[in-house]
Image 1 (cartoon, rainbow, N blue to C red):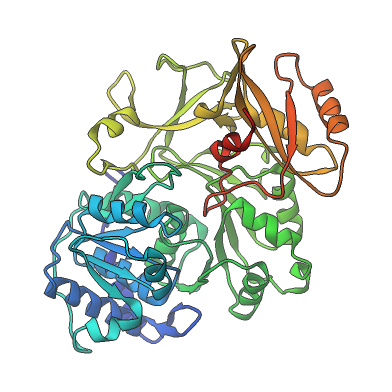
Image 2 (cartoon, rainbow, N blue to C red; image 1 turned 30 degrees about the vertical axis):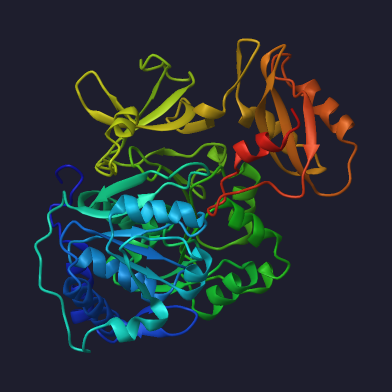
Length: 503
């Protein structure tokens, strides 16, 4: 393997075409409306690819896609990649203005979208881009037997362009190439994504969280079941009826599933592997999933930009549930201080990672790309993860928070995760998030936002928690909220919480 590219590298479109030829009648993909076998899905990919080429889309050019998970969405994504174009799935939770900015930034001449997304766009101007509604896809497609002109794709060619889920400004476009995706697929092969697998996809296809399961599932020749929107009851029903073997979820989905009253009534014995990524996953929830849900539980720590990945095989290391596991094979993860120097084992530092799966850079943002990089003494390129962590004596990585979320109070660093762990230990508290609020006396002071199981004496709770914290860590205020604001993949939006706090 060179530069993270498997020695037997074949581009993604070629891999899918191989499955369509070898197992044409095997089930391939299912959404809320219909199911397709491999030859049918392959034919749809070919027709879309031919339509894109007919409309002038060339190698390296972005194809924008917007909407909920569906077979047309999946086929448009795969078709763009197969003809050497760049799939640009847009963040559907973004504002119309931000979406228009993404379309402009990626330079797409074609935008595929479902009717709901088109309605939400309203009258925002998309420039000269051609809008192709999925509801009118058949009218846009070429003849049934149409196929695109073959192209030669190199590992370094761009595969997709994913926009970060920033809440302010225009999200940054992250360019991932075929080499990076091949590395992801190779890594995921250890999870058993083969022709016998059925993978349930319930997070949006515009998220890398989803793609690191969706792409290996298809590359392995298995079957994919798409949910347009997550619902705990429907997830359990589909898992049982479709005999699902694999699922990729984010922690908030595990929370909802474990709280779903009918969870234990469903037969989930076909599950082999469940993964979790994208947000902190509590020790208590990991333990509960292990005890109530058959199959392996794997926590994947990484980032859309790439860098290094850690894997926690929770069933194999039940005493390490407070960590995100060990670096994956071939992944180099180090910790550095504010001056860019590596820290000693056991000390806290910013996570930087190097592997075969690293972004080419941020689209049209060379300065932001440079800011995201760190180079070792021997010149190896690493990606800054933005997280703070420490390695234990066994080489397991324990995260303590985001570098930008560290609260500096009276000159002392306070890590929100330490405070949140103490808050969650209180029986009245279901969820907690701690943010830094400006303080004239201390510079910043920690304030806790909590979701309660039931009514509680917040002052008494705060007093008990502060008794267990160090003097420099103590929380200055506690606020009860109905729910914590989250991104579409479950990350708590701490900045939104801070903005709601009275000055």
